[in-house]
Image (cartoon, rainbow, N blue to C red; front, side, top):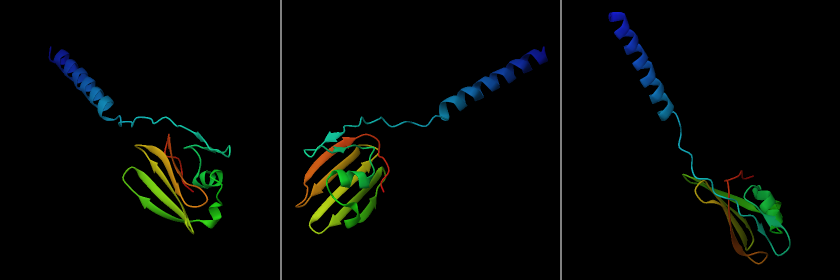
Length: 121
C-alpha cells in the first residue's frame, strides 16, 4: 500500500515538474514586422534586409565618402552618415523595423521599410 502511494507521488512530482519546465522555458517572441521594399525613381530598391552600404549606394551615394556616428538604444541602433551637407540616418529597430531619413542636396526623403533589423556595416 505504501509502495502504491509512493509511486503516485513520484508520478505526480514528475508530471508537475515537466509542466513547469514546458511553460517557463519559452521566451516571448516579438511580433514580426512585414518588410515593405521601396522602389526609387531611379529604379533602385531599398529593402530592410540590405546592409547600410547597399542602402547608401541605392540612394545614389558613395558610402566611402561618409562618416558614421552610431547611437545604440534598447531595441536597436541609429547610424547617421554625414558628408558635407548630405546626411542619411538609418534606424534599425526590433520594434519598428528599418527606417531611412535622408536630407541634403543629393537626396532627401523618408522611407519606412519595416522588416527585420538587419545588420549594419
